[in-house]
Image (cartoon, rainbow, N blue to C red):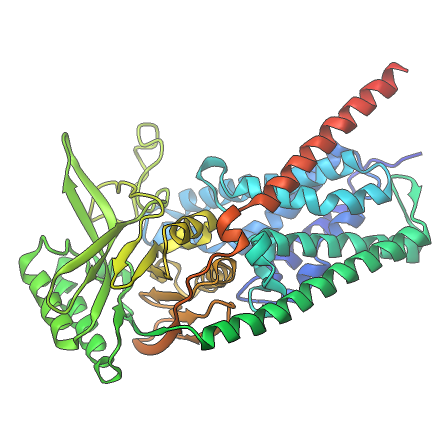
Length: 523
């Protein structure tokens, strides 16, 4: 008779899976753990009902997300000025929300997989479907999807130019399913009271190995192709300035001039390298550029003395009909002080740049206190720069693949991510944020310039290789040449077709299973 009981061993295995998942991501960065991190969860799910599978998945999710995004409580407490008794429950609430995806995964998997072969067939599709839904539901929060664990394994992530990061997630989920079935066969254990045959165990391993080999050799071929393409492509010289401005002082009017002088002096260090473009981070000028005459002239003089074009982050505003409209912006400025264009951040951070449900949450304050709620800019807007167009993404916009794609479709030859990760301190968040940036380069075959106030800043080539990067909380000016590619990838053109197909197939499978069971009960 089937045992449907949650015991201590089940809970131990669930928490183990959650912790293994976290260890797969930066800072720990044990990427190889991801390939079997879900096996303890699957072992715990062996003979459970969908209902108990849901509860067990929730435990996995809580163990994973509380240890992955723990830094959120520190950020809200330090810069959102929320007491810990408020910031910790908010962290718990977000972790519960994210854990629901793993809970639903566990529930659907046990319901759809009465036999071991169905587990192997459905598991990667269900996992990818839920990751895809997480990327857009409630404005989306696709932070550290499973595929991002392999950000520095270049041969594996090259398939992202076809499937996006979801293709890598699919392979990892398939690996977990294959290893689990092999484990059941070798230990003589069953799945939902069904024996795992040698043919299924060996077949699942063979199928995974074949897919893995295809992915690996595709990656090897693509890296060689991209490097050959880079060698025949034009390049530009870019300087990144990392000002390392203390977040506690950043918006203090008493430090505005000192911050501006520091960025100018660091930029002048790059002059000997004759850069074509100098990039400052998000809100590097903690004042309204072009509105504050004295500080704006200081910046323009520094740009003139450096002799290069500058891309600088600054808050901006436009007088609206009924109220002032504030934006988190980036200005492209020439040596003569002329503004070539401006990009306004399109995907805003809840509680960081605006307060959702402000009417019902009046006690919550915004972390950027110096301005009112920001307004969103136009998605996919690019800035013309000579013969090229720049696709600028501010802060965590870079974790949304569709925003990068929109800029490539709007003819961006170079992607630039300007950010201020000082909020996160020395936690794992800056490393996690940087890791996701690498996949955008591979998906679209574009160089990415990343300028961060306190780091990590760096240059990423179109194959995902990190050309150079900075240390956290260090003043830095680094200059490198980056290739300018123009073509579009399958992923750039068609987007998340693979993820949508996974979702469609999963929904069809759920519907067919429902009809089959309904028919079985009637007969």
